[in-house]
Image (cartoon, rainbow, N blue to C red; front, side, top):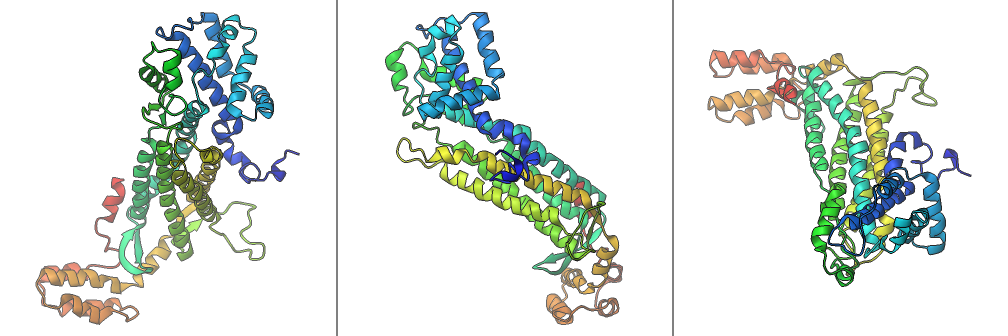
Length: 455
């Protein structure tokens, strides 16, 4: 039986509502619909090409019917294609036979039935279909899901631009930053990664069984087939690849999947950092009425959104990296190992979408905890060893670093009084001493606030 509770994949079961937007781009129905769209477009292009003399132009009425079938392809239509496939055991040939059947009552199309799938290998149809699916899936679903995360980080960067925070390099107290600056860092990284992903150009081809237009030239030698193919492919909104084997080599798909995995890695880094900041108490999480954090510990408010995001990003990247590594590799002019792998593009995108949804929900629950941030800073006066020794260096005091190392390293922290007593005893101009004596860990943030606002 078909029910969310019996689904093999959580993408179609537990998480179906959150991944439904991808069904329109990566389901089996979506793939068959794309194939129909490409086949019809190719038939129309042949009829419209003046140098392709075997086929006369279609009438406006026939063109309207072709467009209507392409635009209105239904689930029932797809079911009929699959029924034909059960006999042919070939998915693209089933589309060709369905088109012949569907237009049997149209005299113009039925008389031109031999020009459906003319001179095409299955990959001519498939590579263009996959390019359309990925292009539209990115543009219409994934990129719009990334944008609110970036917007939320920008908001947090500006809201907390001035809120001092103790850094932890190697997990140890280090030079302070601001909470906003740390959010701005990630937002900037995501913007660069998003731009790279959005700029990836899908490639496509339509050049026959081994990429040489062999059958095309023998059947109709009067056509400039490379130019015609270029016009057709670019007319679908896909960049043209003039040199291929039987398959379009998938380099552009791999580029997109690599770019998406790199963006995901940035988000995974964010998930882990926010998880840590929640653990330190730098962030509190808004509580939702009725929710339970633990089945036995009533006080718990766990960072589950960031944990879910991290887990799903790991699944997504495992698939994306396999896709990127496997797809550009094909034995000689063609093997079929790409076919089954390509059917999992939507699975990889599905785990991305789940991760983005969880991350955004988690970011929306965050509330900064200024008291906890301030307490951590106040307990780490030894971090001011850096500015003290740097000012000493600027005034050519010999052994500056070593003196501060002796005072602070491994001592478990020093007090304000100890540090300021050390500063007062230094052979420094009074204005330099005053600058150092006016410092506190919370004030030692450099240009962090300014940088946070630049994002």
